[in-house]
Length: 282
Image 1 (spheres, one colour):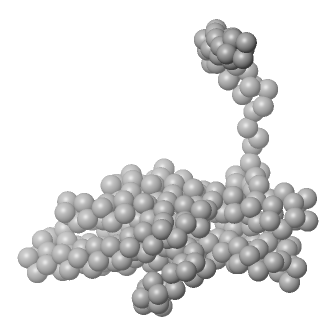
Image 2 (cartoon, rainbow, N blue to C red):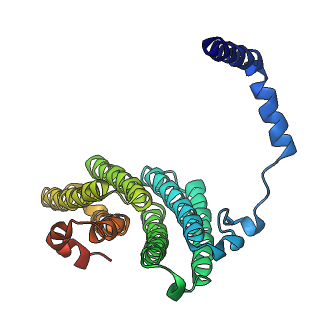
Image 3 (cartoon, rainbow, N blue to C red):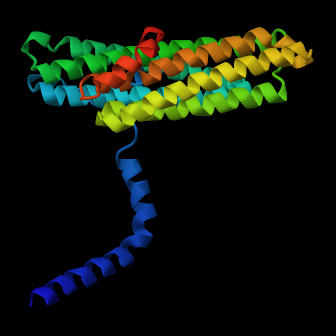
């Protein structure tokens, strides 16, 4: 009898799914009509997870703040994707989109900061106090990253519009490779922040070292092209080296979450080995 009940429910649910599958599209349109997206006031993003009623429960409030901080990370990810388009010459519309994203980051950062400020730290447990510090530190780093990306795009736009110069093919390929590694480290850093997994944190530290080694190789390769008097490299030399340095700063901001996790785990020796990275971080 038990097997008959299980078999009946299995067949019933399978048949129901197959019958209702064609109605998914119409139902999606109906839900979109009944529950339309609310327009955002002043064109900036509004916090979705900062529930004031959760402030009475610190662990829940911190989880809400962490979720909102991850939204900031998603916006930074979008800004980096747009930056690659600008490097390839798509400027006007993309630059406007980046400005909008930067405003959204600023809006969420302010909301998170004010939300956390309503939580008196003296009433928090040691674990909650550490999490509070982690969230505000990541939010600050993401805000700094947003400002830095915006400045980088202004530099590229000025170079390509006022001076009408573009990167050499090899130079652009190098920047694109470094940019791809930068996005990967941002996503890994957000994952480390969310999971607090020591192994992922150690991987992030290794990726930071690999990024710095790659950045140095690219700077040396660019100088070699200057010695060979490649015209495009000569024209964009300052911008090229500045972008590499800016990406290095961004990478340090994205990888900072690794050290927080490692300091609270039993891997103190690794943290001591990496103190040079910490002291050189922005």
